Length: 435
Image 1 (tube, helix red, strand yellow):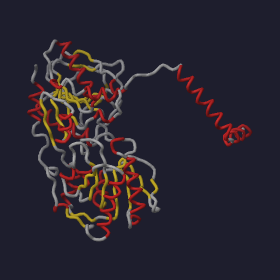
Image 2: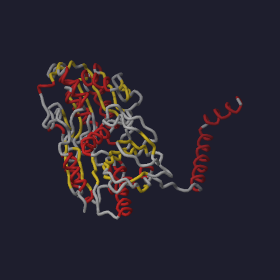
Image 3: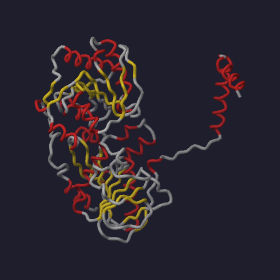
């Protein structure tokens, strides 16, 4: 065995033999691929097969990818919050979890105490969660009286097909479903099958009651030619736990720290531009070496900077850990190549962080809060220059390290403690309209 290992190392160390082995491997892999049938399946659109339920009690349903703690942030939490308001007038309420094969409901959700059951069981009254991630060969009971709400594009894709099945099975007039649109999701992909499928969920618009996250996204959808039966637009509000922490201690004491939202696995967060901009800033800006740089959001290795420092990857944070970072970081960077603002730039600004993000289409967050700088165009050079201006302003005393967050405000009620979605009863009325 040692002799074989020695021979393999010698062969791999020989340039001509290494090149020859590469050629052999490439030909073998190509020949093998020719004999493998292509797999066109797209996991997100695995059909939800239905079974007739004879129960006639009206029921409101939410189709959502997940409810477990590790998945519940931003978009899912917002969708569940709207669903909670909509469900107030219904005795029977069901959440259908499309992606998880098992779930432990996040404690902060209003449905945390509901019973959880796998798809394929009998239809039951009351408030329940059905886990449908492992749905092959199993059926979801559907009533003539079921009404649906969807959020992520593949849940809306399923909602269209559930309405089609329901209409045919029960001989119903045309019905609508509620579609909470929180981003222009076709752009999550290159021009491709998934792009086309995601875009298809916005049509036919006449069967959709759209609830759109921010006016900027609503403007973008309109510019793309999408029209809906009814449209309701809402502005995000600060997470309740974050809001409570901010209200308790509104004065922040900042450090020479840059907190960045680093997600190398999510294209729209422009991780490459983020790292290139930090590298250019570190190499050119006087005093950059005195600043700590932390990357939160998604795990990745440390990224070396030319001044000897690093961008330290710290991954996803607990809520308490995130609050501490917001309280003590002087500068934040959160990029989002999308018409939706995303939540981190708003959260950073709320906690007194001088925040850099980017403009896109109709989105310009510099109009939302004076602590936000919105880059246009977004390049490593524009990011580097903005960072250098900010770090220099802190270093020379132009910007203070002690910040009273009450001194500057948002242009919309982001810090409002009023109940969200005041239009929820109207959405329910429109959902129940037939024809």
